[in-house]
Length: 136
Image 1 (cartoon, rainbow, N blue to C red):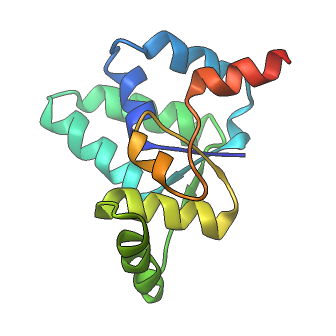
Image 2: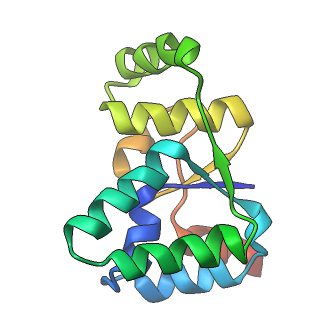
């Protein structure tokens, strides 16, 4: 099961360079295999609304949560020390540490284009790496 980082969703939603790679990855699994943190979800909302893409955001919500089964994950305020420990341990910024802590808590594989996760114990995979592993 996969914790899909914010940059993966935005790559597809904003039709950026690797959007097709993300599409194939998302299409390769049922949506109940995908997880997103509350932090990531709200970051997508902030980004898309700032870019005047409110309808894109609402379509994402419909596709992922209303019609799909993407699961939204939370960290409790009492888990904040785990986030700050992760910042210290791996020299991550807050958003990456939040994602990493959630992946640890729920034992999920991180899917991200962010290479900062490469310096962590858990690491990360790109959508293409996961697709390639399915072919083996």
